[in-house]
Image (cartoon, rainbow, N blue to C red; front, side):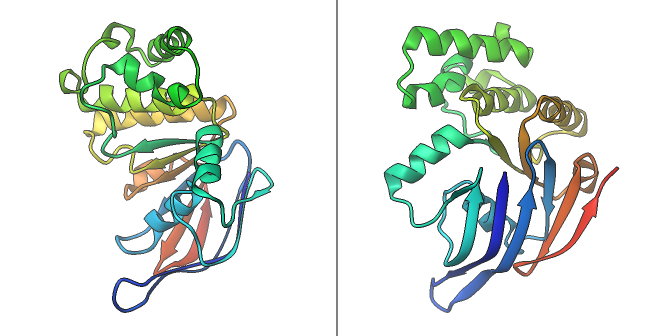
Length: 224
């Protein structure tokens, strides 16, 4: 599903900063993989490259056997919309849109009719146990409810892979486990997930833990 071969990335804001140094990584279809590393280790840059939000300098990135390299903005957006769902620590919900409208948003960019996308959004909210919150604004929901809305939004376009950047970072421990249980359920249904986390107990619930330090992948732990 994902294959990285010799990925390098340097930023040139002032003095050059070599963030990723020859990254090789493979994520199989249906895997649940976590990426761990200290701040500045390169994990966010790696996730941005996986999400086609950032370019890389050298190497090759294959997503579903398609080489992702030197894409135009339109082509990159097309691949993102079709292939990838995103979940963020800060939820990234639109404050003036209700839960249903937030979940339906990816389908708007796929030119699905309003009636159909709202109907599908209600189905996904129902799956997340949030149908009764469909017309609530983000300000009227708890952190856990907002993250479940974000998960529904990530799933509605039926992507091939979901990238989650610290998805439980803003949640208490009980809600954290509820969100992880949802992600594991989605994974059991065949979805490929890559989760960036600082939390060891979250990472231990994934199939394998990829440790990154100073832009280099070190140990890869296989979980039972």
